[in-house]
Image (cartoon, rainbow, N blue to C red; front, side, top):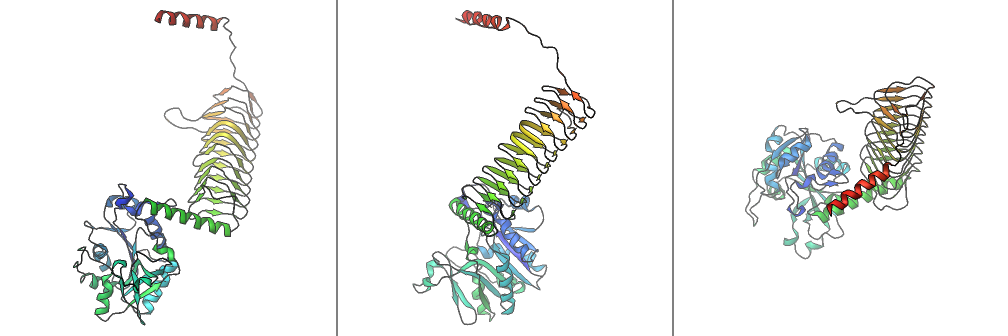
Length: 463
């Protein structure tokens, strides 16, 4: 069985944060997750993550899904892989991929194709490489006719070697049995007193085994983050790469200012994304929509020809033809049905809003089922929580809810019910009825003059 070891023990001191570096996010996902999903995309699911600084945070994030081992001391990449020897010994028949948890752009094609070359050439170790226009700072690959003879670091390279553009990505394939054997032969006899995984190449060659290099077509596998500036560059690069994919698929952008679209978001052709819009994982948007500006959509399904202006929507569904905004908040487990119009300063939570229903402005609808072609006036509130439990309201088709109506859950309004402005509904209303609840207005003449006079006297006493 083929397996993977992901090195995720780095502290990232230059990040100036109290968390493992691989948990820093690129486009809303920890870098570690980018690497894991690449492995899974290539069919590798037997994964061991080597943790170190704040390792409990790695465990919490992974939730027990993968094996983890602790590198208590940071003594080099070879030492990190040594901690996973028990994991390797569970099955030594296949090959093992070693990856860096803070290099998020490794891709499934590179993993699959490098494995094919690794097996085809009968290598004990295959280094995954990339060619860079500016290779400064990276270890250069020294090739031979049949493979490679080593990796030379920038500081040790000759002037001729510095001209080499093929560099080490930090990712390797090993025959698992050979990896276990070579790890036992690593030494720390160097200036840093660390165990280097790159030394496995010289060990393999000294023993007459084959070592090779697979050059990936994806030079981005080299990209990593050592500090916040690097992390920003990774985010910017990934952000534009995702936007470019959507451009190719027919999605429109007036400009890309403030637009963040996470991986896995689906957008139909002909939809336009306006500035300052954030579309997060799990979101699917249909064709012909206009989304933004200033909109956040998280894990929502959005139909065709929907308009969302300054909307925040979470874990909900918005059907085709809906028109929403500005300043609308759609909270989880809500469904806004086809043709509904939701206007400014409306909040909807755990509710169904029927076809062609209009909630023009200044309303809260929570834990409710609203029928089709309902008009809900300004200031309407569903009073769904009594301090102990939440209850639902239901409003039938074609109802007209007057301004400042309070619906005290649980209540049900039948078909075509009207409520007068300012009414508080405390019991069910039958079909076609008018509900009106207004006390007798009382006018207390001269009240304001008396109030002002009293206030003036109190102010004079304080003097």
